[in-house]
Image 1 (cartoon, rainbow, N blue to C red):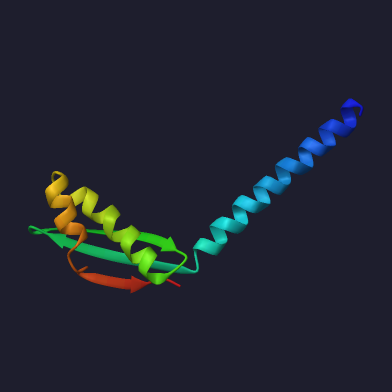
Image 2: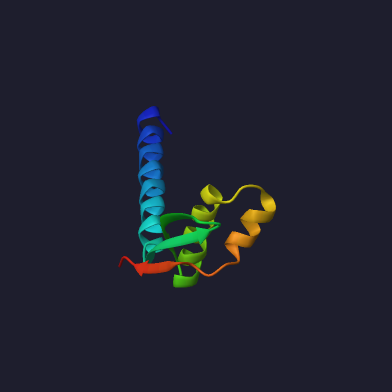
Length: 90
């Protein structure tokens, strides 16, 4: 193969990779939510998406708890508490 053919194949492979990544990201947005967590008087809200509603809620809740809890024990307690609010964004 000459250099031009290799460059064309590399270009097509790169475009295919970008298309795959874009497809994966768009597919994950099927269930998008904003979750507000409250722990020891502190509140934080985060937005997340996932392949299921439960996965999106868990991801957003974990992200919110990571900012309002202090230490591993509090983080786990916060993550296992009920969200203050869950708002679908689809």
